[in-house]
Length: 105
Length: 227
Image 1 (cartoon, rainbow over the protein chains, first blue to last red):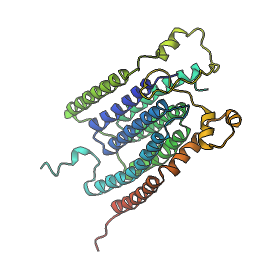
Image 2 (cartoon, each protein chain N blue to C red):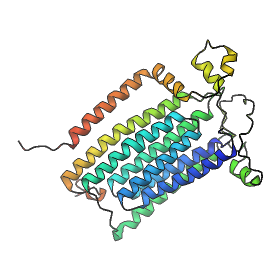
Image 3 (spheres, helix red, strand yellow):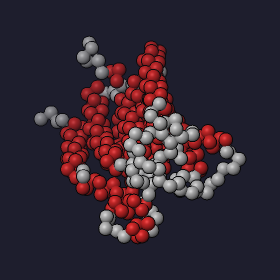
Image 4 (cartoon, rainbow over the protein chains, first blue to last red):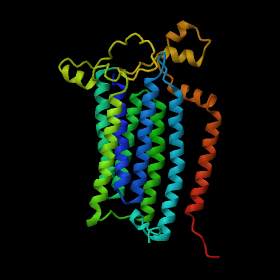
């Protein structure tokens, strides 16, 4: 049986790949995809902890319900975020984050 | 079934493939390629959730992420007609900086997970597999007697799921011999039981969040007319 630490390492690596994507990429849609990947990594570690901390052969279902809420809120967040990207594209004709310099100049 | 050696190999294969697809999301310049890599990555992550015994969340992962969210991404990419990022000469510094920050974070998480109290108790299954690669058994191993529950335990194997205990939790009046006859683990029933008893009000609030999200998305993305 795989120990908890390996699930946590997997989820930490997935999270840091997502973090690298958020920091490195300039296309806002890809940045958004990487954010979703980070949420998924958090879900994996929640489910792994729910299984590991379970008593008498039943996992802690509060963690799985929390993970379900994370998925639901992620869906709402994607709808709003993509609408913001569409609005940004309408006003600036670009989805590059380097174009967002109106506070700088 | 989840205890067999095959399932352990499957976890490592799926985890490696999921990380590879995640790297693909970051590395490919074309956003459509990134989106397809993300679909694969979410499918593999849902396989890992299945392996953890969370069938409901695995299905939800496929339906919500790979089904709904990804289609929305691809639709927006198509609608805005986004081309692949071209290479700009002065972009290596933020790339290297971001990679270093993420690598430091990954190292921190790995060191914390490997030094959790008791995390070094059990032998590493990958190493055990490597040592016993000759007499690999694909048959399910006999289930061990349930270990005494310790709250602070982070190491060793994950505790096995018990269908009998789940049947007892769903229906406290069930006869013990009837509970002992239970063979399948009712994961979806238990998630639903927790969701609609303990977390009913947050669930309704989640519904309102989704409603306001969809209304807000329409308000943000619509075209304003001049008149």
